[in-house]
Amino acid sequence: MDYSQFLYMHEELSLLLVITILFVADLIMCPDKKSGRGVYNTCLPVVLLTLHTVLNLLPCAGDAVTSAFGGMYQHTPMMTIVKSVLNVGTLVVFLMAHDWLRREENKVKQGEFYLLTLFTLLGMYFMISAGHFLMFFIGLELASIPLAGLVAFDKLRYESAEAGAKFILLALFSSALLLYGVSLLYGAAGTLYFDEFFSQLRPGLLSVLGMTFFVTGMGFKISLVPFHLWTADTYQGAPTVVTGYLSVVSKGAAAFVLLTVLYKVFALTPLFEAWNHGLFWIIILTITVANLFAIRQKNLKRFMAFSAISQAGYVILPIMGGTAQGMTALVYYLLVYMAANLGAFAVINVVEQRSGKISIDDYDGLYRTNPKLAFLMTLCLFSLAGIPPFAGFFSKFFGFMAAFNAGEHLLVFIALVNTVISLYYYLLIVKAMYIKTSDSPIATFKSDGYTRVALAVCLLGVVLLGIVGTVYNYIDTFSYA
Picture 1 (spheres, rainbow, N blue to C red):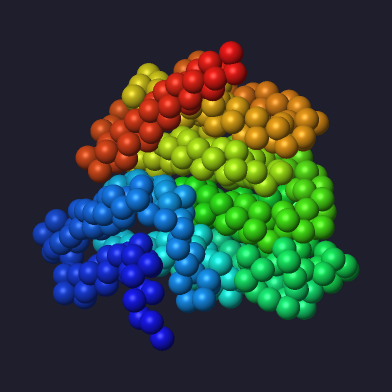
Picture 2: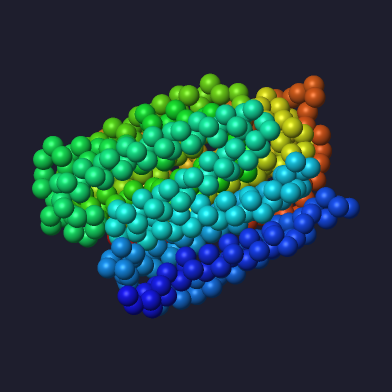
């Protein structure tokens, strides 16, 4: 065996080194008895993850397409970019978690939180670079099992324990469906390598069933309707920081992998029309059902859960057609969605930590007591709604263009109508913060330094991505002029 092949996995090895350092640090460092904070608290994980991201981005431009271990592991510059996007999202989550981890019941569990989070990230790395269904499934389970621990992190809270139980049971069920689908695909093609499916897959009932079970299993991971029923309860019961991580980083990795697998395995086979037609109805159901249920929510975390389900439909919209334009639109959408959604969850988290309030009605009059938080929340919600000139408008626009160019005109029209509906329920929160008043408004408070950095990163991301979208749109317009 040529052990030099491991050098192709420099991102995974670098992340594994970060995990090892944090594991050793957690063993030898204990919480400070005077302040109640961990000795390294948030600083060491943030610094290590930042160095890991920067060092792996530097050689990205010169990297070529490579593979290792007989093609089971693949590496491309696009994969490095997606991994770096997930790194930035995880970094923001670490900054958000600082105030929460300082609580009495969490101060001795800091190491476990960072390690579980980074192990899920490592699993997502394997999923993204997989060129073989076995490697993909190993990465999927490595990402899913620690997530159950994160969801149930506040184990003394009934809601968190219940959310963890629901999550792990449905994760096991979806993994079983997905694995059964993979076994059927193996029976139809005689191989588990992505690149060999298009030449060896034999069309028939076995291959259609295999593809159906596979997409169903991934639908649970991405929270697509009708596989979404676990999402609201899990988002509500999990710690807010974990909810933000679930809604962005986990979902983003799963969506990218779904596009990769569908494009490599099914796009060049007679099954192309089947999965394209199936995704058409899944996207319509996901966006429509989630929008209608979001209007009825009073708990802000359940509201964001249905918002995330709706966004999942928009995320996989560029997948239609399996084109390179769709791949680019998907990555850009993930960037914008990460910045906007994590910004909203950062505000929800800091308000919850300082006031204990999580209902939409609790945000009545927030602008009068905490205008900066209200402004950032509004900016993130407008971006999620896709209002121009915010970054979310361009992310939806590029996704619609990719689907439109793939011939999905009716789907794009239905998605546009649903965008108007989503604007209505996002405005309900804006109305509560700026127009409605409360007899017991949220008191004025200051967030800690780490939270301010997280909010600043999200704000900068939304603004810069909006500028990038505007510039790219003008360049694209002039190229056709």
